[in-house]
Image 1 (spheres, rainbow, N blue to C red):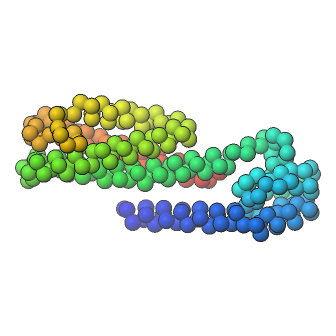
Image 2: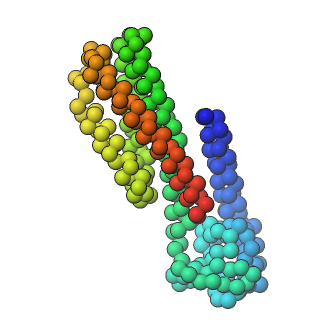
Image 3: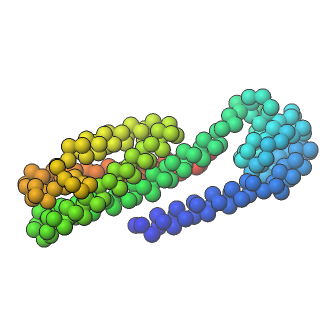
Length: 239
């Protein structure tokens, strides 16, 4: 399951790097200027800001404008195809905004993969405690080492969603952020970081609570993974 996911991420990163190299090529700018003189525009990325005097009306190309798209000096956008223009609204930050949103979902996708691993490991450790296969001190020590990384990772990509104003993702993640804060504030009295106390973990109620928490969080992270994957692909296609 992990290997195809890693290969997909590597492919996306390589594509973005290649696009960036093409985007900042001076050759593209010269080609775009040449096309503008004839009233047409035929390139994937026009990366420098300059004014084109050809075509139906003058327009200014913005940084990393997509194929066949240019902006007039005013707040309008013209899409050129075969020398013909179709005008609409122009948002100079639109394409960079989409790029940042896709990056946020990509980071969240990678981060939630680690959270899925943490949740699976927690469920396995709790099950081993229930069947008396493991020492509670060593098990709690192993589990407590994962608590702060999981909490920090989940808070970081929630903060990224806040920065990119992804309302559904924010509403989806904030309850878990609040629960993590509440859980850590009300943890047992311990000198080391963590929430699992080896002196009480073998109590039946504590085991049931920890087991239920592990399964719920595993389900939450799995749903999040597929939603972030869908949202990232949708954002890339839309942009």
